[in-house]
Image 1: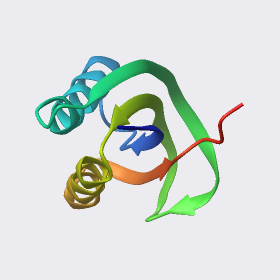
Image 2: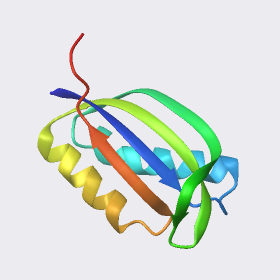
Image 3: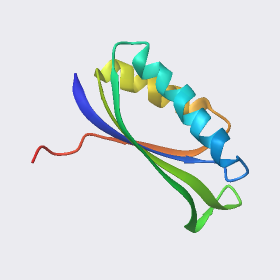
Image 4: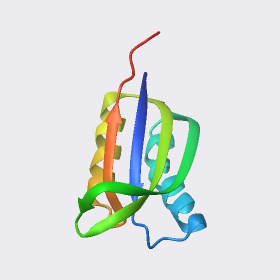
Length: 96
């Protein structure tokens, strides 16, 4: 199991509770495959530096998780296919 950070940018037309529910739904991919979800940090709506697909803002969420590389690949695939995800990024932070 490795430590990862995932940043999600969701469609701004979602309500706050709907965005949180969508994040929880995406994270079931991790928990159903034996991974663990740590801290979930909902940043709320933020304005973009530039337009993405004619959208000027998005709902940001940062998630810490422990999972296998195969599980993270599947999560990335699910996020790529989801209609309400504007962008996502998965990183492995450096150990302190």
